[in-house]
Image (tube, rainbow, N blue to C red):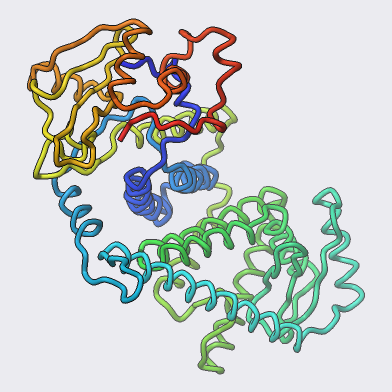
Length: 465
C-alpha cells in the first residue's frame, strides 16, 4: 500500500461531499450530547462551566474540519449509493434553450441556497430594526453611572473605553460587535452595588467576545436553516455563555458581593417579566421568560448562582486532562467515513466509470514496492476506451483486486512505469511520472526532478478517473 507518511498528497485537505456529510452527521450527534450536558445542572456543578465550553469548542471544530484523515476507515454504503444516484443521476427535466438537465440535487441546492438568503436577510433586517429602535430611544447615563463604569472597567485592565446608554430594553445588554455598547433599561433603577454587578456582567461578555460567538452560531443557523437541532444549539450556546459569564463575575466577588450580584439578576428578571406581561408583545431582546424553555434556563442560572461556592474546585491539571480527552474524542470522530457504493457494480468499477474489472482487461502495477495502480483497458464502446491508471489507496480495494478478481501484478521500475503511462494514452509520460511520484513517492525523485516540477504549473492529464 501507499505510505501515507511519505506521500505529498497529505498536504492537501481530502475534502469532498462525503466528508461534509460526515461533518453534518457528527454535528447533529454532538449537539445532542452538548444539550444533554448543558441541561444537567449537577454535571455542570461537578465538572465546571469551562468543561462545557470545551465541549462547545469540540462541536465547532468538528463542523469546520470536514476532512478524512489517513487512518479513517472507509465504509461503503449501498443506501448512500442509491440516494446519491437518485439525486445526482436522475434527470427531471431540461432547461429550455440551455440543454442543461436538472436533477433533484440541483433543486435541493437551489432550495437550500434560497433558504440561506432568506434567513440572512431576516437576520439583517431584524438587527437593523433593533439598532434603529435603540438609537431612537437612547439617552446619556448619569455622571455617577459613567464614573462607576470607568471604575469597573479598570478591573479589566483598561482596554478601549466602553460606551453606555439608557434605552428601551427589557434588561441590560451588550449590543454591537466592533464597538460593543452597554444598554441599560430606561425605567429600572439600580443601587450602586447592583449597577456595579450589572456592569461587571456586561463587561465580562465584552471581554469574552461573546457577541462574536453568538454571531457565528447565528450564521450557522442561517446556513443550516433546515436543521431544527441548530436552533436548539443556539439556545444552549446562549445559556452556556451566560453561565460562563456568571462564573467569571462571581470569581471576582466576595460572598457578600455575590449576594448583591444575585439580587441584581433577580431584580432584572422580575422587571423584564412584569414589562412583558403589561406590554403583551414579543420582546426585542433575547429574554423569553414566558416560555417554558426560558424559565428552565433562568432556574438553572439561579441554582448555580445560589450554590456557586459549592462547586468543585478544579486544578489546572484537570483542564489539561480534559483538553486531551476532548482532542481524543475529536480524533475518534474521524475513525470511519461512509461512502457511496453503487448497487450495480463493485468498488473497483468506480475507478473505471462502470467498466468491468476482470483478468482479461485489467492488471495491477506495483511501483514502488507496496504502491498499487489499477490499469484497465476499457471497452470499445466506452468513452474511456484507452487504458486508465488509478492508484488504489484503500487496502480493501487491493485485497479485492488480488484475491476476488485475481488480477495479475506487474512489478515495474521507472522505465516500466513510463511504458504503462504511455499505454494509458499519456501525451507526456515523463511529466505524468513526475506528477505521480510527486503525489505518492516523492523520496524516489532526485532534487533536480523535485525542483523541475510544480503542481501549480502541471498541465498534463495524469489519466486518473
